[in-house]
Length: 389
Image 1 (cartoon, rainbow, N blue to C red):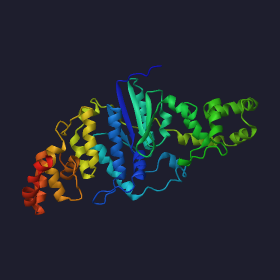
Image 2: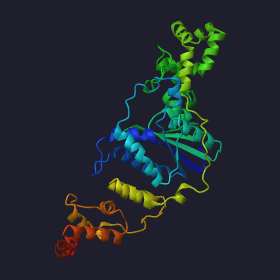
Image 3: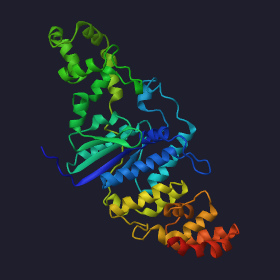
């Protein structure tokens, strides 16, 4: 069966999940001033990758909030095994909102709910229009329960920040043996150690999978048990497992409820009239990347938006070959000798601008402050023709 062609592609980003993964993958990243930036770099790199590969019409970011969630309120031990977020990560979670603001990506969150619940609700709203395709970008697997055919997909990290996979319904079935909608039943039976969801004690992965394949939902399973236990045993359920299930019906249903992503968050949401690309401006992104010293990402940013036809407020149409910028590269080397072979991106990062004349003005002013103007003009610049030849 051929896949449907959709009019709009909408990406929903689980900001917290990606920031956590990036923080642990790049723990030692920091700016010259000592600001931790590993999580921010990973998020920014992933955002550029999503834009380049998926070319979305709309992008939205979803966040957890610091207040206790409704799950925590009904189950004190929810996620109890997780380590408390370190101050360096918390600082980057807060700072990351500036990155989304620079990209002009709307942010959604709500007290008492997790990012997954916001994503679930937005997915539910957006999927009502069959011309919308929704791609959920996340670092964990909880959102797989939302996958539907090829209209709702999950773009997730397998390991690190570069190994990714995009799940449609067929791929979820291949991995788990059942449809995405039964993942909450699977967690209700087997539990989820990462979230400290207990499930049914004594029910492992294989037994949970077999029960779902035979009975579908947990509710159907218990209805079958209450209707005719002998028939349940005839379907291959061992007597020992049957007794465990009978003794833990409440735990199974409660665990399923904890694992279920909400679809009914009270969100004031309307799809904007204009697509994200039409309102995007490169300049704010260049500025924050320069502030964070993401030199390599500035160059990648230019390439990505040149490829998707976006000029915005940036200089994507300019010839940015090093030959044209060589005099400024020499000036930057004099100012910072650690940069033995400055690239154009290094100049942009240092000066905070991609405009040649503005960059030149900044560099010449700094050379003057350091007393290096004469060295630059009388020694280094005359060597440029010789170097080029």
